[in-house]
Amino acid sequence: LLGIQHYLTMLGATFLIPTLICPAMGANVQQTGQVVSTIFFVSGLNTLIQTSIGDRLPIVQGGSFSYLPAVFGIIVNPELQSIADDSERFLATMRVIQGALIVVGIIQMFIGYTGLFSSVLRFISPITVTCVIVAIGLGLYGIAFNGVSQCWTLGLTVMGLSVLFCLYLPRFKVFGFPLFDLFPILLSIILTWGLAGILSAAGVWGEDDLCSTSRTMEFVRSAPWFFFPYPFQFGRPVFRSYAIVPMIGSMLAAMIESVGDYYSCAKIAGAPPPTSGIIARGLAAEGIGVFLSGLWGTGSGTTSYSENIGAIGITGVGSRAVVQCGALTMIIVSVIAKFGVLLATMPQPMVSGLYCVVFGMIVAVGLSNLQLVNLNNQRNIFVLGFAIFNAFSIAGPGGYFATVEGNPFGTSDGAAIALSIFSSPMIVSFIIALTLDATAGGATPEERGLTAWEGASRADINNDPEYVQVYSLPLFFAKIFRNCGYLEYTSRGKMPDPPENGVYQASRGDLGDLCCPCLFRGEPDDENNDNEEEEKGEPGDSPIGNTIIREDPAKSGGDIDVEVASGGDKTD
Image (cartoon, rainbow, N blue to C red):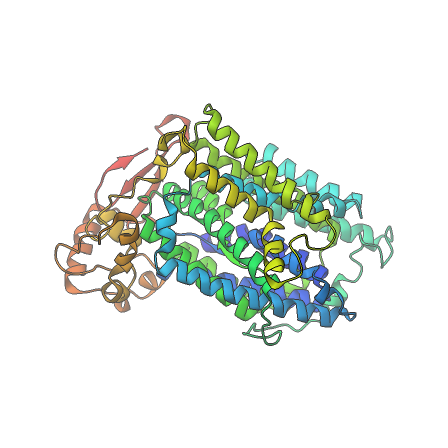
């Protein structure tokens, strides 16, 4: 049940991506349903990869909004817009998107597994992260409320219900279950869609009205019961420079966003902060996910979902096994084709109304990183304001490159690449913020927010029981790859200390470990260590490795008490 809850938590954000991009690509309802099924299938695979050989945190992977600006840039390219037939234009556009995702997936894997990002990570502060994430959210404001105006009834209703459930009803429980707190967006969709169905059946809207759902059941009945997504289902990928370059910018934005998510997930789940090497391992796993997204054709890359991190904080369960159960649920549900087609028939004004809420939340998530920054320092204020404003003045919907005729850089291939770079608010904000923040003086590392992310720089990842239980690779991978310890070298300048007993221990607590422990037994030394640690834990605790999260009702303010079974120390 907890795994299904994670699936429901990411449901709203994930299926919104194909329902927005597919109609713009020219897709019909069946093709959109196919992409919906595909993105859930690949999200399940990616989550299993991340929780198994990635950073090992209980973090869900799903379609990334960071890639949408680049995707829309591809959609409106004249080469693709010149295709008259909508279905053919969809297939041609999807193949170009697939080619770009495959390339950036390989690039991200290279950056992760070579440790290149670890050396850059020390220069990226919460200021840079904030500027990039804000650019992601604000960069899409032009497609939100304009769509609501196509059907005020549905657009404003879904917006109003989202505000009601998110802000005013979270404390109310239904039979003791925090329904409004966990599923505000999903409830808004169900109620608004139900209203649309009732009004359509009553004849308030005609069949061709954008508000109408009259043809929903017709599309669902005509769809097959099952559909199994497979690689290259839309044809052979096509590689275009005008698509790849903006995707690289989206990849960097998604990577920066994920770094913040890793720290947040570890903090909420009661795990020690990830080291730069562990972060590099997680980003490389996301690179595998982006590559798979390109093979299958999801229309977007993959990233970590902050919504599910919030669900961990609400439920108090930070277990890998629970998230892996959610991943299996994604895969199973994705093959039910009728479900994908049903989601694809959502009225477009409803989708636009949801974007008014979701994109605003993305901006807010970006701004939340500023809690680590000293905003009384005028240098920090200047960097933030200069980077965000000029990113949109240069590359935003009403910026210079969005309104200028032709390509001011020229007509060569290099000019086309330059235009792609400076037409992306994410890339421009990243370049400006990183350059100014890394080179300008006037602020200490603490004032820039860097010290909040430096706690793991001296961690003994192979001997510290907490790090071993949470972050060590599973099964024989820990011994063969030595937990990818070489990734720590780029940031520390030295290799991490080997295990004192000479044995690289595998961490436990995976779904397979719980279902069939006989297949997941480690070396004899591992079992002895596990027995010692289990004696310090308690039955029924929900582990990441052996990390326990429990609420202490005696504490005021609802603080969460975190205890690590391997050590017994407690922190608030």
